[in-house]
Length: 88
Image: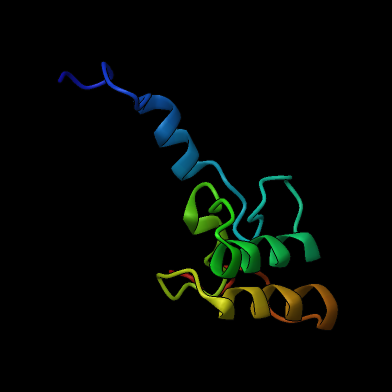
């Protein structure tokens, strides 16, 4: 079909990919322990993915893994690097 005639809204899809806070996996506009729990729930319990998935890729590895949840926990509780602080 024609672009924009299906289930995808192109402007909304583009906004979701570019308008997000890295580390804010649950979309609340803040980074806290609930984001790490959200990532863990997605990985291990079939929960909803972060939108966009890049919002949960805190260590810039290119994939969403348990390492991202650990990265967030380290940031929130131990003063670790900020999410995506080292991404290019």
